[in-house]
Every structure is written in C-alpha cells, then in structure tokens.
Image (cartoon, rainbow, N blue to C red; front, top):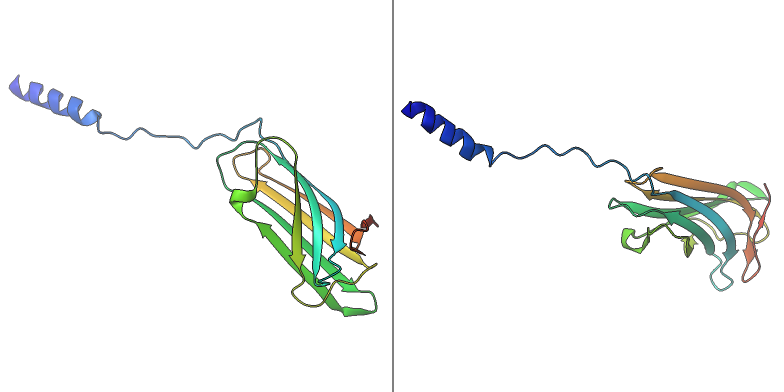
Length: 155
C-alpha cells in the first residue's frame, strides 16, 4: 500500500512537469497576400537606378514576410548586354495589416545602366508565411521611361 501511495504521488507530481504537445499553428484564413507592379521610371540623375512603384496587401500573420522586386532589361541593339538588379525590403518595413500598402523600391543595375524607351521585365514578390496564400507575385513587361514619365505596359 505504501508503494502505491509513493508511486501515485510521484506520478502526479511529475505529470505537472510534462510539456504539452503543441500543433503547428494553422494558417490564418483571413490573411490574404497580393502584389501589383505599377510604374517604373529610370532615375534621371543616376541612370543605373530604376524606381518601381508596388502595391501589395497581406493579412496579419506572425511569420516572416518580405517584398522583393527584380528588373531585367536586354539592350535592343546588343542582345548579349543585359541590365539586371533586385531590391528586397527589410522584414520590419513590410506592413501586413490587411490593407493596401504602396511602396517605391529602387533597383540598382548590377551591370550596365538602364536604357530609356526599351522594354524591361519586372517581377515583384511578396511573401507572408502564415497567410493563405503564403506568397504572391506579379510580372510585367514595361517600357522604361526616364524621370517623371510613366512606364507603359507592352505585353
């Protein structure tokens, strides 16, 4: 009888120390993720930079998030010459509260300057792990303009 009391008391005491199993949190069904590329303009003072306007939305989720824009442009007179670059926004700067957010990202070419009035391929991606869907992307072919002029879609 005494052993039974000791075993029962010990089992009861140790059961309070057990770590309960926690399932992975389910994605928030109300959290939406979308991104749209707007205008793209070559900086008139620094022709190696292009400014890209992006509108995105992502729902509230307590996971990692990012916003990335890439630009690639082939020289129409020399197909072996390509300008390309990308820009990623710091996680803390990506606001995910379910409302549309507008950002302008500067993409620096890693090779040659951007060519005015030539087509470029732009891709924007927003990710918000924990949301449903966890990522969204937009891709467009735009003709890059210089300065305040607006880029035009070509395809």
